[in-house]
Length: 191
Image (cartoon, rainbow, N blue to C red; front, side, top):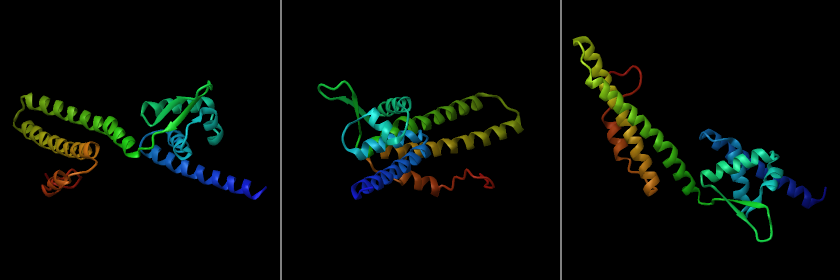
């Protein structure tokens, strides 16, 4: 093997490691590992490449590449293009990493927190509207207090995420207020 071929092979191996590392991070975040690997390959390339080239570099099937590229397009982290006189489609990675992260936070995490807040509100309203005897009224009040603590925590999380998404910075004041209030959610704590 020539020196150039050896260097190219070593570089390819390193790039695969980088793609695998990003794939593992993406998987940890709840996405498919292959999504991270494909995006990283495109990102590191720095110019549009075709789906067959992606398949070759990552040793994945055309079907896996097609589905993954469609998902990445859905998230706005890959763009599709064509070259004049060429029937093939080419793909290019979004390079603004903050734009990608903020979109995921906005469309996934914030939506999940809002769903939880909606459930907390429905539960609070249902429990509050019922008539209870003395013993059950005490238990219902305790449940309402704890639901409100969960809602407070969710609102703090929502506020932090909104700060990150909208301004790229976080005001930790609400978190500190929450911490100072001594609101415990853990076992073994009286509240």
